[in-house]
Length: 112
Image: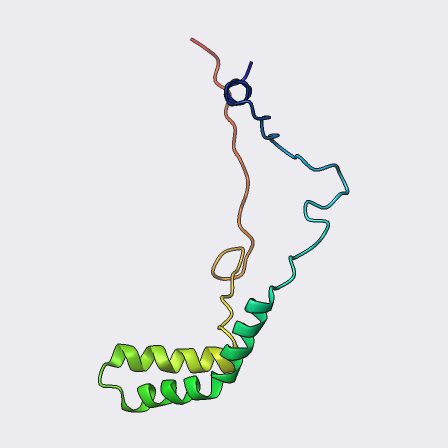
C-alpha cells in the first residue's frame, strides 16, 4: 500500500491519480475556459472606461513626478500599454553564433 492510498483509506477519500490522469487524446478541460460572470464583465467594462483618465494620471506622474523611480515606472507603463512588453531574445549557441560542442570523451583504464 502506498502512502497516498494509506492516507485515502484513513480519510475515506479516494486517492488522486498520479502521473498522467487523462486518457490519451482527451482534453483535461473539455469545457474550455469558464465563462465570465456578469460582475466580471461589468468590472472589465468599468476599467476600460477609466483607461483615458488613468493614462492622464500616468502622463502627469511621468512629466511632473518628483521621484525618478515613479517617473520611470509611469513611462514604462505607458510604453508597455501602447506597444507591449519588449521581447526578450534568447540564443542557443556560443556568443559568436557557432554551435555548442557537445562531444564526450570516454577513457577506459585497465584495473591494476
